[in-house]
Length: 381
Ligand code: GMT
Image (cartoon, rainbow, N blue to C red):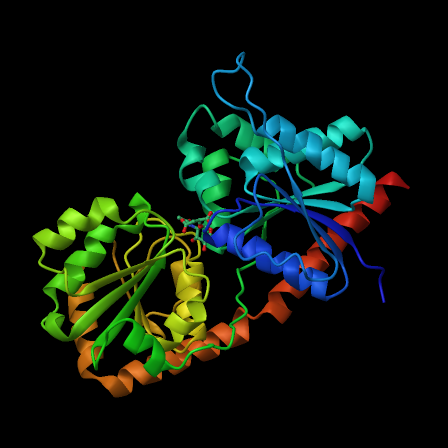
């Protein structure tokens, strides 16, 4: 049995797939006996520090008159170096190249040795958004090249990263995983709380940022011939207010239910009938996977890495971004064909459980960590 590892994890603590994934990864590693230290400006959403082997170290940010903009990267780097030294970390696992991997590389340089090794996980926007910005592109490329290990959450993101930055660096694809939790309320209870009777419940969970195309989502619901017996439940990790005028314009006030920053997503996942996703960019689509784990068919765009998660025609239907007409046909078809809806939901649950379970993916991360550390030993001896 190899000895347990000491791992530092830095992620965005806000609601979002990468933070949720990093938090669950840390929790799973701690359950397996590894020592996990989260380093961030805030306690990650969903992190439970009462768990054994799991610690949180806040980064303190002071505001100085001299700085027009507060700086986070340098105090983060100092904290990473301090925690690495104090606890003898083997690995700093940065979720996102900027600013996290950049800070981790600086921390290692400050410490002067070759530990901790830096592993950078790419989740999407480092490549798809910031990678196109000349103010960030070179530093992201530098962070990727200086990390001992780099992972991407999909094949699609790996290819896009290689072409965006023109790099040869090996990138390990490690798909996301999800650990479904038992609902604490019955379907009936949740439906009553939501004020539902026998409506068909369509679920969307996201941070509502522009690439999610909430405008498309609303137009699809508005164009369904079943709109009067439909409800769209949005579990929002962002501000819905900018979309309220469109809801009114489309006359969807009675159809749309928004709940903010929900922690017990399992209760809503268990109660819904279908997942709906209209993203323009999506490197993986963790919330699509969450729907699949709860046995729901998903209607989605075919953007980015989504087709590594969803199988078009088997676990749901995938359409081109903005093809609202096809989405509406798919939605109406599944509302009218409950047997097909169930069949697709079951196929999705099976695929999610077979390919994206925590055992498999956390095991992959652990093998990868050990590989990176063994490279380290072979080069230093
Ligand atoms: O866009 C989001 O939903 C948030 C973003 C994040 O950083 O949390 O999500 C990215 O990482 C997730 C976890 O790996 C992926 O499932 C999402 O597809 C990815 N988002 C984009 O690529 C736009």
